[in-house]
Image (cartoon, rainbow, N blue to C red; front, side, top):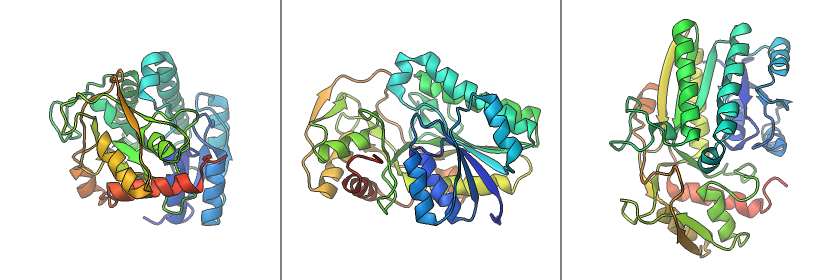
Length: 342
């Protein structure tokens, strides 16, 4: 696919995965437009991507639920495809504030899709999640497996998946790619962009790295009584750069199709426990990571990892980086940016 002069709108592009994907898009020759309300994103991430690539990113500080502002962006700029990251993403918070998650994740997606259709933009890559599987009956999980998400975050992602599927049946000219991520960690090897959560991190890796750096005193591990090799939760961790490159492969697939609807698991196909991650991070950093075991979190499951065969075969994409590289790059980001983007 010739990317010259093709413009991609990235919603949530100032966020963790979004910023890494913007970098990969520019490196592949695409023009990038970003919409982000900066609740979970950071404008500095995009400034650094611009410096790293020598390319300008057109940025709009807009909430996707603001249909009028969204319409102006589509009206004034030629957009060939959309990569849709924007959304709230904390499982625990979604249990406490379900209406917030449905309002933001579902309503915003509907507004985006309506605006796309009205401006004849018919190609979208959607950022979904392995949480749509809930507690899987068999592992590794496949795209065709039964979907019973067990928290509002996962259910909000599944609702958007269904909306996209129904829209495709109603408007066959749409080309849609749904990417079910497993657990993104790591950072760009340059140490220039990475994960910078606000407040106390919800995800494991930034919490681990801050404990290793002495910014937080102790790591809380939520449960050690799961049916796993060491009792702690097992996840399929994937390097954020591998994940970003999967978006490019998926984008290029839909740009080459006039009509398609596909769902892909994005993972390594391997499961690592929380303690596996802690031990690997200790090796990489040379720092001891103290931890305590606390109660399980509501909405968490014991084990899940992907069968990524479909993405391997149809997209020609395979995750390249192992857990050691994920931890190494995360530590490099932490050391070079002890206060994140501040």
